[in-house]
Length: 213
Image (cartoon, rainbow, N blue to C red; front, side, top):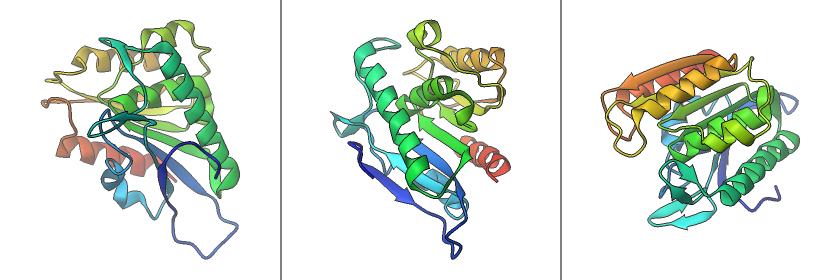
């Protein structure tokens, strides 16, 4: 596939070349890489295509998707571009791989969660579900982006109650916003900082297992 992104891809084993499968797109946090989240969803590798996308910006010890202007404020031009590029990436994979276009899921942690939520709002009901761990929705996305209907979206949003990087209240605000937009939201909180606890992992896998058909 022609893309500027570095990514990994795993496909379900099949002998039926006419069969189409759901697709799960993974987006990591700042300073990480495309290998970071794959292990969390390894139990789903026989059920769906899994694409894990590396952020395009060097951010030692890994990579980032966008740069930060201030607390909770991505650089707008950088953010706008990566949202556009990720949307194109997702649309191109739907065209080029045997993917069920009605079963598109986005999964992100931190920066990846910010993008998963923003992409869901931009792409609307093209996206069937999201898993957004410890993120937020930038104010300019809510105020200035062309928000599409998300009334068919299933969203799993979680946040650490002790998060010292992105405040817990931002996770609550994301839950409230998607609920107001008509999405079906599952919100979970955990007594942890900026990370994914074992309980969080179990809950998100249960959500995906229940939704991915």
